[in-house]
Length: 247
Image 1: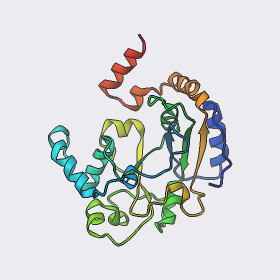
Image 2: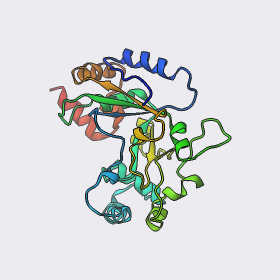
Image 3: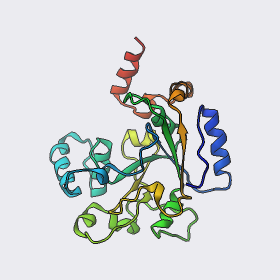
Image 4: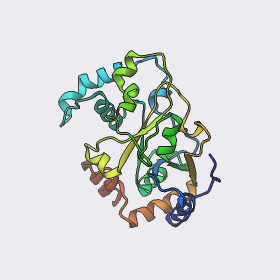
């Protein structure tokens, strides 16, 4: 990373530093919050211990999920999105176009770890240049249906086993309420296990530290701005949890 590491102690700190660090950049900017500062940007599928293929995971998920999903996925990518949504290891990493949404995940300590968090800032177009994805269109970001992502498709990935490609940033249809609420976007990895923050000259990525002692303060500030669990997860379980916290 080429940016100096900075602490974020409040939402105003975040705004001040983001304005300074992105003032000369006019493309899309993505964000990812992690509750533990030391965690790397590497998807769960690449960190798994068991020797199990992605296709086996998809098959197992489809076997049990088909009757429980309102809209049956029509592509293997759609199955990956559903699996990511429900906690199955995939080659995807969740990102958001909303800095405040990402900040919520960075300060959410429901896992009781009480450690410093991280807010990652990604320039998706610059990341993709490392994977030789270019376009005449300024700040182009492919969709998962784009031919340039063909080798990342689960079916091709399962059949062709001799290449190792770098992670890329791509846009997916927001076909569920959670993705829409979170303004969700993704990076997808291939067989190259290099964490996103270690790729190339690293000018496509940097992060801020969220001190553990400031997490509660920032979470309260987010609530004042209407960024609560129900806004991030617009589901019945979120309503129940919010009501329980008031007693």
